[in-house]
Amino acid sequence: MDWGAIASGVLLGAGALLLIVGGIGINRFPHFYSRLHAAGVIDTLGAALVLAGLAPVFGMTLGTLKLALVLVFLLFTSPTACHALARSAHLSGLREPRSAQEPPSSQN
Amino acid sequence: MLLAAGVAILVAMGLALLRTLLGPTIWDRILAVNSFGTKTVLLIALIGAFAGRTDYLDVALLYALINFLGTVALMKYIETAPPDDAPGERN
Image (cartoon, rainbow over the protein chains, first blue to last red):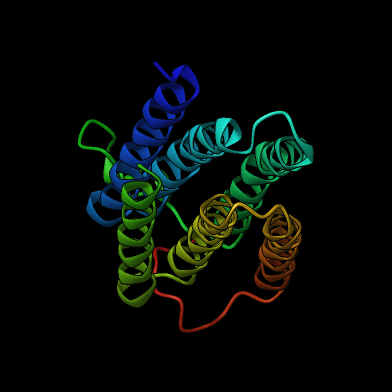
């Protein structure tokens, strides 16, 4: 029984599932900030799982080292990009629609 | 399993493209394009694993770099010059 192939399949399957869920999330969530949550959180974990699932395919070669490099880079840049997006949207005045318990006149 | 993961990544890319086309604000579009770029990196790495070559991983790494740089550059631009046609509640 090839344990490497099994581990690769499980990780790839979980990562692909998360990517699909994230894709549905950025289409179904109502506001920009909730879409940011879906894309940021799920893309980070989904990318990590897919890249980890590719590692057993390459085995103990230079390819796995490069995969780890891509993974580390994505893990650093994805939250940074999300933060830049949220900061830009907030500074430009994009606000979520107010919730029901908050009186609508509080902004003025 | 590699093939199934590739198809799933392509479907997720299509969903991100849909949000890029629909997105009401400019930030929605940039978010979707950034997500699309991340999935492109994964697809390139997966094609490299499919072909059994490590050269593709260099391309994937470079693509991730340029994707991040592009997003941050766009964000700095939007931050200092908010587009007038971006709908959304302003204060």
